[in-house]
Image (cartoon, rainbow, N blue to C red; front, side, top):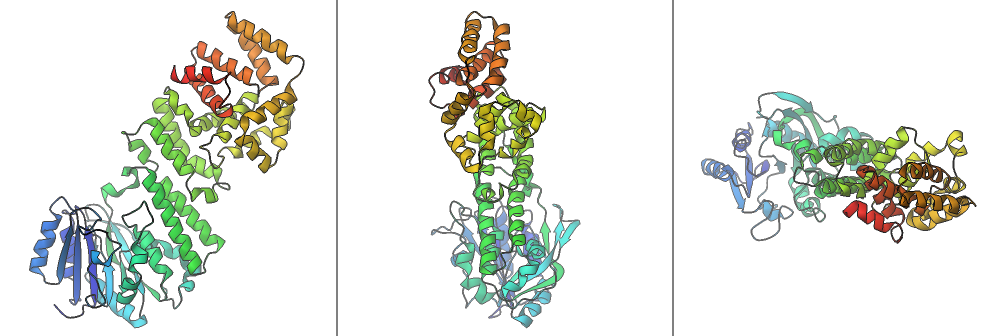
Length: 516
């Protein structure tokens, strides 16, 4: 083997026995022969390791290293350590290039890209790529970067958005040896609880330290579109949310470090964050091993994620439209499950339906208030629905207590959400008149005597005049439950548990409905 290869190719292979040989062949058959290939067999349980070792015997430019557990070195640590590749300034080529085990290179990859990188002494060279179907016999698309040479990474500012898709992957690149090694640990280390590297995070981390970047607008890399790599086949879990947050952090750190943090670039990162989360949401339908409540927990976690909260206020309706089909799916699958109504997203979904049917009344107001006051609704999803109570016709039918709420500013409304039971009592005191006690007594008498038709008529009268009354709400739950409307009773009971969490009058009937 020659002393100093022009390019050292590095490959991590995990259970890639169907494809890894094509990837290896594309490296060893480069028209530029002064290259080296390092393969890390990443805990494979199929024939990947045997294929790699056989090639190492046939071609002395290939080195194979092995670890028993995926992404973890036997001696401790993982890919964030240079020992993962056994790279050093002495044994590494002029440039480093990463290739995935199920992809392949054009024969001229090294011969074409090396002189371009050398001419400008590039820290990073970005080449174009072709996207190939799973079987590898048809090109289905391509991605080529715009022609660009930077002497300062700030130069990419105007081009950041159009460059992003080309620069975000670690494959199809050349990295200058000194640059790759110097910034390796800081680029490949993920924030806990992540341990496996995300290629976009790695690239954004490297770009923060890049000065000279150049591009080649020709597809020299072939990326295989794996059938098993679609977002729809992926689990929607907290890990996905951690990844989305990590990607956003890496992106904003790049914008800050390179002084290209314009509103346009920041909004672009927001859109990428939401797209990354939204593209995984179909996985909720595939997670058959998760209970409905667990699936709702995943949706709640998405809505409340660290990054989403940065742009949720201005984009509530867009975000809600993204999750709504999956809430509807869960509800259709298990609407009789009493516990699903404990999730504010299910209750908010139902409230939105009611408002869509023109039911901007006192009862809907209370159900809406329970969603906004729910401790799990950190970002107050549903607050944008206030406009349903804004028309003069609707306002003319409101009680004094309701009008007081809608006259509050944001800070005062937050106080209502945080201490809902106290405030609805205050609203009731504004509405209460000389008829209240008499009507309530008559209502209770009719319920006790099982005169449910008359009780229901009185209930509607009292709900209109005294919507924030805990007594009226408690009787509504009881009547609904006694009349066998179990889904509606559960919606009411879970709403009441949020509004009056410590009230001894209403909590017993709520418990009977939910757990009885």
